[in-house]
Image 1 (tube, helix red, strand yellow):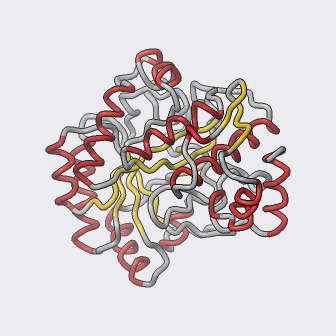
Image 2 (cartoon, one colour):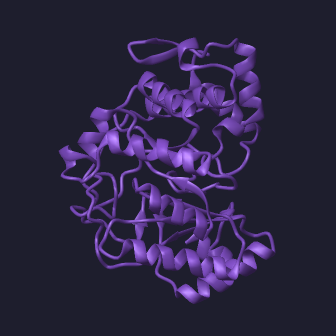
Length: 319
């Protein structure tokens, strides 16, 4: 809905507008995959207009493409992000959408997709896709298999996703992935996989687990530990991607991060800077309210203010 608001196709009241246009090709078919957290999944009973808390309302393609060009020229939007689902005509529909956007605009395009062959990767690059994203979603192979692999009755495997990421990184120079924090992983498991991905030039975007009514997965979380876990992973990711520390530099006790591998002063500087707690992902992606409510922001769509930084210190606990 936020994207439609920026495009002037819906009247939407927004505290922070999206800086990326979030697009999904409309189809009344459910995805052939069965990721248990997803509203689009084959076994889901959730509304098809939802992805996490975001609503993707149907809109006229030509109007969207035309307005996208204008919004990019005026500086309202800096990127278009296309989400894919697995159904019979997904490739043809995706290629058509990319071509239509490229015919009208030079706006950078990100594509979030399951693992593809090298020839399809090359074609996407030629078509004008700037950023390739292959979402792992889960932090461990066990969670992956349970939530979106064989255990969920889905077509995906951890090995093929990792292979698709590595091949994508070679062809595009870099590639992105998504990790949903809160699916049952420990601090250590999340930090370990972020560190491994970083070594392969794979950028990790963090999402907080969000229950979607009608989805197959419902996880009860302790709110206090959930936000501590998320903040710890955000700081660790920042340190890893900024080259300040690695997984091996950090210490854990029963899976809980106890030492970031840098001094307290360094952590306080990270909190003061605030960018570690902003939305992560492709350049200019801020995903406002994609996974959270106004009462609790896991990913800030802008720099956190003074009061929010003080709250982050409390959420992190002993640092």
